[in-house]
Amino acid sequence: MKIGELAKRSGCSIQTIRYYEKEGLISAPERTEGNFRLYNSVVLEKLSFIKNCRALDLTLSEIKHLVSLQNSPETPCEAVNEMIDTHLLVAESRIEDLQKLHGDLKQLRLKCGNARSVDQCGILGELLPKPERSPSGTRNERSPSGTRK
Amino acid sequence: MKIGELAKRSGCSIQTIRYYEKEGLISAPERTEGNFRLYNSVVLEKLSFIKNCRALDLTLSEIKHLVSLQNSPETPCEAVNEMIDTHLLVAESRIEDLQKLHGDLKQLRLKCGNARSVDQCGILGELLPKPERSPSGTRNERSPSGTRK
DNA sequence: TCTTGACTCTATAGTTACTACAGAGTTTAC
DNA sequence: GTAAACTCTGTAGTAACTATAGAGTCAAGA
Ligand SMILES: [Zn+2]
Ligand SMILES: [Zn+2]
Ligand SMILES: [Zn+2]
Ligand SMILES: [Zn+2]
Image (cartoon, rainbow over all chains, first blue to last red):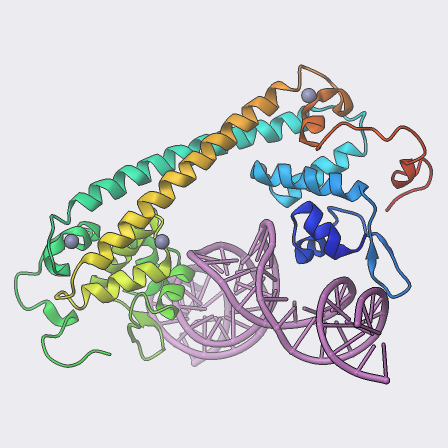
């Protein structure tokens, strides 16, 4: 099959397939006389493997590592386990971060209080380091007159 | 203060500060005779604002939008609210994704079973679409002899 | 005064995992 | 024979920075 069919069957785009080849994740296939890539169905499994790994957020270089481990089956499997464990930790800490983020956003959202204009809204004020309005004379940054482009 | 001190005080790197200037997030400061950027303390607040927004995962273009809203305080605040709401949804769906990911990884980790070699480990097998070994004669992809570079 | 070191300047390239062309060649159908 | 559909290589773009290279500037010491 040519690359277009492979793309449809694998769910990877044509460019992605060529990219994976360039990066050494799949091996370069044979070519037709007209220089078209010609695949057999084995590559479907390899692409599926890559997609599964990507769905687990493994990087391409990690996947490359796994692929090379597949080619030397007698290697100890510790490296694989460590990679998974690392990703478990990464995922956990990202979840924590996002949950904090979500809480912060929710708090922030409450600051609006149905104001209508930005300066009454409270959201933008909340994002500033401190409301600390300069008492007088230090207002040079937002000049009261003049059109600022 | 020059850019090095600003970097230390703000916690942004020098390159990041210059980058923000190039992207229009902070305005270009005065220069010394020798062409060095010269900042006053106001920019510290602006960088803090940006950092707060980045911590909430707002993109630079969204932050740019917020900055422009700060400069026109009479604008209705709906746009701000919508941005926050969108990010709440994004955060929620990302948390869900990551939790699924985490579960998948944990499952995967259990497949090792204290094997010692990659081919007995079960983790790599789990990432393949199907174990489906080709019965015979289709092993042309992993040539038994020859050094593969 | 000269020199050394620390600092800053601009411009450019690299990062990640793709996506989107441009411009050329190939194949297939009619 | 020609038009449409497909494929090829190579390049540039994405987001938000980071990391150089090579040149210029500034402050302090000998
Ligand atoms: Zn990783
Ligand atoms: Zn509001
Ligand atoms: Zn957004
Ligand atoms: Zn194992």
